[in-house]
Amino acid sequence: MSALGLIHILSDQLSGVSLDLASVPSVYAAVCIPLAWAAAGILIPRRAPATLAPAASAIALAGAIAALLSAVILLGSALAGEALTFSAAGTAGLMLSVRVDVIAGVMTLLVAFVGLVVTRFSNAYLAGDPGQLRFIRILCQTLAAVSLFLIAANLWLLLASWVLM
Image (cartoon, rainbow, N blue to C red; front, side, top):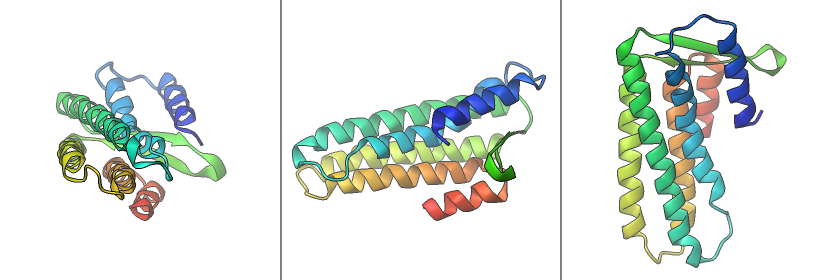
């Protein structure tokens, strides 16, 4: 299932449920946080010359900023209302659900901020290192798994994010 497919499933799920407008951005923000990190990790190629390191750092910083902004939206939505759980039916009867509450908002904001700081620091510290691209790619993938772990609302999604870490 692609990320776009998951967003469409969430949109279809939300269309049949009566929700207030304050809760809709929190769903998209909760889904966008792991997607921002994962997209940054996927866009960095496995085998690339060291000359692509600045571009990879820029991609990782863009993912970090997107995750940080989404975490701020998530926290603002969580502070405005009560805890919300959104579920989307997957294949073979598996449910993918995310939980949006204050604790998840604070923790994802913390992870996004620390990820932004580490990404920015590693950009300067690892400049010219042959393993810089690999480090940035693995860092983004790990931050995506941690962000998914924080918003998981069922055991299958929790286990999948734990294995990805």
